[in-house]
Length: 311
Ligand SMILES: Nc1ncnc2c1ncn2[C@@H]1O[C@H](COP(=O)(O)OP(=O)(O)O)[C@@H](O)[C@H]1O
Ligand SMILES: [Mg+2]
Figure (cartoon, helix red, strand yellow):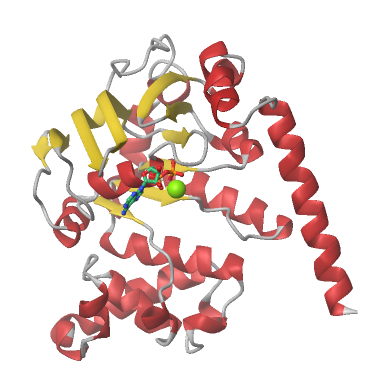
């Protein structure tokens, strides 16, 4: 992707920000240039319908936020799209290619990659080892735990060069030989993002990239997410931090009880009665701005507690 990145991003600037001007705010709205399209995706756990998405399109080259109250089905939907979980019904495609039944590491090689958290196994590897594993796409925990030296061999040098370039870009080059488990919360998020880029994905999916990140690192993370779009990639992210959603999203999709209930620009969505209702249904007697305040209070309290601890 690196060589033709600039051409690609230039051609994206068509009809306003990321080509989304004039798109309907109805759930399932058609996009001018969708990279991902999903239909009739359902996933039940026992009697509970966790995901029930009739139709959704993700615009190429845009940053789309997926928001919704806790338990809305956002993470389950991510897992289904990336092959980590199988739906009861539905079909979906990336660049017109069906992803039904495709294993996660193959989905990653086809251009759609999700970040995933540093597991206990990955924490025991060094930062550079984590990056090299990223080049293989994503396999299960058992795979990660297995000896992996055979994986690169002849390709080792180009993989290592790519890894080192990304570590420099994400300001992790000084941590190259450290165990991933020794990184701070924010540095882990950077490593997760850097590792995802090892497969040069067209579509990057981030599940709560700001969770556990201190305010100082948030700005830097925001910049990194924007830079993904600037180089022509598509970003889909789940986030509770409304400031981040407002700051960087071109488009917001709102889920509640497994369904998409609204879509739109950040401003339109945050003023949408259907969205306010969705959050009201989940948190009694609160609204979006109060939720924001609650979150801020919790953050401040956490910071104070941290300072007290360090005294
Ligand atoms: N593996 C599972 N087994 C049973 N229930 C699950 C499982 N994963 C998710 N759920 C349920 O599905 C619903 C959606 O969960 P999730 O996708 O994690 O929501 P979100 O990410 O929006 O908070 C929740 O009610 C959750 O309890
Ligand atoms: Mg979740």
